[in-house]
Amino acid sequence: MSNIPAIGFAAYSGTGKTTLLEKLVALLKADGLRVAVIKHDSHGFQMDREGKDTWRFGQAGADMTLISSPYQVAVIEYRPRSFEENLTMIHDVDLILVEGYKQEEIPRIGICRKATGKGLPGSPEDYVALVTDDEDLAASTAVPCFGLDDAENIARFVKDIAGL
Image 1 (cartoon, rainbow, N blue to C red):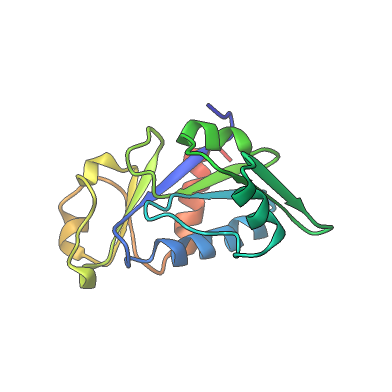
Image 2 (image 1 turned 90 degrees about the vertical axis):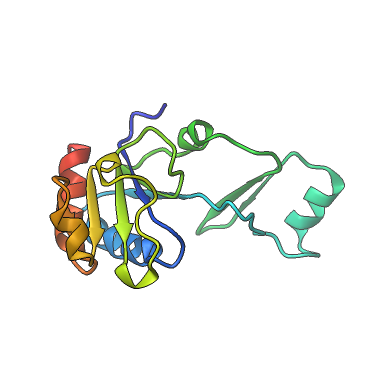
């Protein structure tokens, strides 16, 4: 497993994980940290567009395609990869934020938005902290709790538990 600290964020769809992570990335970058994000998509996704060169290489049977420009690089690998394998691809950063991968053994922050009616995936004690607007949930646990819009304090907490 990677020596780079990884902190997970777990919630049901529509709860605001991506919005929160966007804010955290910006705040952590403003603090001078290099940040990576790994996102799990259980539904599958398509990065390539039909007819483009990388798509054509995959259709021809390539096991891996790398596309590079002066500004960015993307690797497309045509096989499933474990979370641990994905972690090994991340390098030269101070912190990895993980969206999804609810079952992995990393410190996780649970997010619960009362309006969704979905609650948390798992028990509050499964998390190192909660981000919620549900006052009853916050009052019923000893786990540190933050408001949905409290990105600055969440960023501080993330840095603390990551040892940064």
